[in-house]
Amino acid sequence: MCTDDSGTLGNMIEGFVQITTGLGIMGLLVVWQADALMEMFTLGREQKAQLKEHKRRAVRSALTLVVLGPLFTVGGSAMGLPIAECVDLIPF
Image 1 (spheres, rainbow, N blue to C red):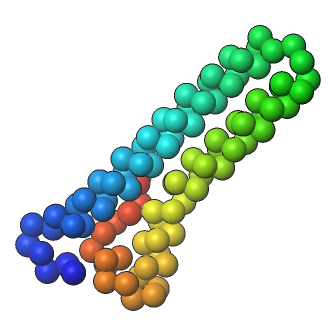
Image 2: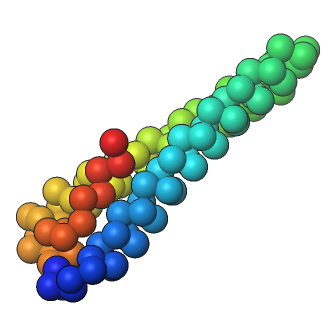
């Protein structure tokens, strides 16, 4: 799997993981700021509770994206997957 001289497959996988992680984090920031702005202009308790729940879901989604790359790298190496040796999926 790693014998490809150009490393195209490994670079594509690394790039995909880095792009999705980056977009996920940027999406979290946008959603968080939008919810905070909406929360300032919301008067009802029920709507504020819904906005807080939406923030929690956004954080969980972004955390999942950030954790999956390193988890696959460690888990793939432990399971002996050939692609895990070629690709560094840690986004930072």
